[in-house]
Image (cartoon, rainbow, N blue to C red; front, side, top):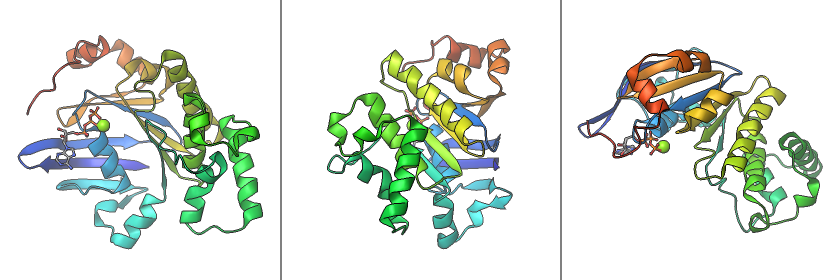
Length: 250
Ligand SMILES: Nc1ncnc2c1ncn2[C@@H]1O[C@H](COP(=O)(O)OP(=O)(O)OP(=O)(O)O)[C@@H](O)[C@H]1O
Ligand SMILES: [Mg+2]
């Protein structure tokens, strides 16, 4: 569904992506992992079309989005839902208002239809409708994540992007979010899920495919099984957690 073909991107003299190639399969959960500074967020921005590569092609269902004009790019943005680390809810809006926010933005109007959509989505992310009139500061971390997910799903994205969904969360909430990612993907089988993560353990438990970035390229891409059995020293080192620490300067 999404394919990077020899994508390169530099900022100044620093080459962040170096002829990067990979495929994201439709309907699957793909984790993109790698150390801090390896270009995970830069890669995501290319997927959404917020950054243009210096070289290479990025194909969405076979169309090269590096050739899109502004209007086509706007339509491309609407294919995506995003769940940020902090859930990024609007504190002055209720849960219900937060959830329908994207719909107002893209011009849906009927109150009745909105109500129905909200109730459906709440059910899908496992939240009680008792929370609808509450404000975000009255919610637990896990509930905020679910509301963030509901908001990301409400505009029916083709691709759901999670940027570091569990970083800084306690293990129980992290596990709940990992399960939520799997559940969401199962509920909506045509949804493509892309998770940016430092957490190889979560990737091994949750992903259909893992792509590990290293020095602007793919160090290894494959199933969790591929990652468990690899002898590649770079991947094994990342696994064992010894790579944390100052990032390298290229
Ligand atoms: N707009 C920009 N201008 C200049 N440099 C940038 C820009 N965006 C990213 N970079 C640089 O590109 C490199 C990769 O950044 P990126 O945010 O993709 O890393 P990351 O893998 O997401 O790291 P983290 O795990 O810390 O979020 C970094 O060195 C960063 O400073
Ligand atoms: Mg990042």
